[in-house]
Image (cartoon, rainbow, N blue to C red; front, top):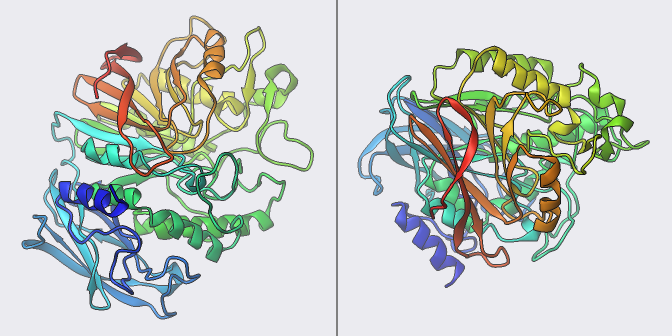
Length: 513
């Protein structure tokens, strides 16, 4: 089956029209990067597009002038019953991107939308509103994914993900990769980006991928970033190669702007130079509230770095006293307080922490002294303890943490103190594997389990995770694709777990595809 046929079949199943894979659009179409929506509210959402007739051109093939773009939203796939329309300005300074905030819609229902510019219409996308505040909701299905290295595979996971029919997709970081490493099935074709123009080209390369365009057009997204949107293992204003301060912040400013230009996020998330507020709360009726976190921008410098370098290390905890420094934070003290206050006041049945990586401790060797990787929560153990102890002290129930980054499936009990066998389980964790990025093998993962009894499952496949919420239970299905060397492959559930309300800690149940 050709890429075009696969793409159009997926689009047709969702009632989407006008979609076409890269290269199939009419010559000069300004909508080569597709359409997207995000951050649903009970009365609306954000609609996104970027005018790019030539994804390989440094300016997207657009003139220097800003362009007026019309948008319309309908309650039918044929766009016959338009219920809202408006006009946005695609500013040249923001790469002719559009972030239209729609309001005045009905809660808890599906809509379809499109854009018009230069006498041409965009593909039709599908989106939806959230339920009304406090409204009873019997179910919510969302998928979550992370780590899609273009060179290491095709974005195969999005086909099965869309077929699962999620209400929402949550992307947890590493939407692009700035660097080249590992096995390759194709090439970025350009060196590592450092400037705004270079980051824009990298996003355009990823955005023309047909499965990714279908997934963006299928339902609204929530997104956060991780390190590869800027530089591997960066921490606040310190890059992997040791560049720091103003020099690194210039690169961060370019990367943050390009991220904003290509994500369906609210205009309020537009960066101001190297700074952008992206952590936020997104409620879904009574059943859930998403706390979308940022673990890169505010974090303390890495512990025990190599001389003249930034980035991560694997260290024995007793050889790195900085790990125990109570002042160090992964989220920054301000975001930590914001999160704990929000959890304590949330009225949702399920509190979903959408963050980047594995929160549970992963001791990499057996023995009395843990060996840990310093770029994740294990590099900030006191920050983790404060958060999980704060959840316990505030008696916050039914917290589910979702993550990515580590290129493996992981399921875990979350405890404030992993050194204390009596420390209570206060939350549940589900980590999705990567869409494409290379990870460890099963033999290596099996070797970690004896030193980590709180880890319920580790798996090396590529794919995504699917979560179904009901008032009484949260169910996570870990979905693996059979191959990433081809654009299309089936997915199967490799493990399923549930969390019962009022009983923190995942328990395994039979798999369901």
